[in-house]
Amino acid sequence: MDTEIDPVALHHYLTFHSVVPAPHTILRGVRKLSPGTIMRIEPDGKRTEETYWEPVFERSAERANWSDSEWEEAILASLRTAVERRLVADVPGRLPALGWAGLQPDRRTARRGGPARPCDLLDRLRGSRG
Image (cartoon, rainbow, N blue to C red; front, side):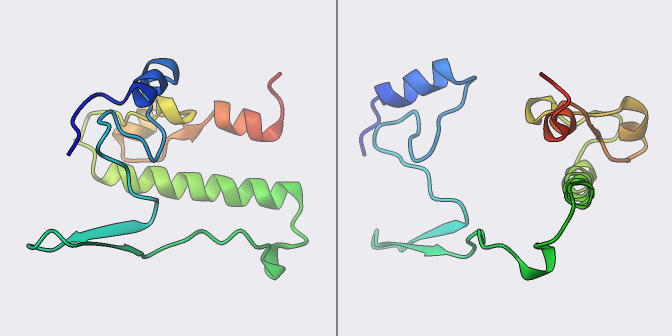
């Protein structure tokens, strides 16, 4: 395995806020798996990849006529669910590190185990920031 630093990945890491986009990693001989994929490595070294999930990009008939406010409610509900799931694993008394995702935890509700409040992301979704 090539363990040299991948110059393309290093460029991304130093340029894009400490993120190396897939399929690169900081090591030239290592690549990230695609989302929703698992890799099995057998004792003999044989590797197999299996995709267990793929996003659906087709319009759902039941959501075809949703208004902007219905979409906003659905997105906020999904964000709240995601935050609540992550707060379960948090150490009591510590705030989750959500600032990078455009979410800022409200300290009072985060301490009680409540959801973080969407702020910048919600403003962007509403188009109120310029």
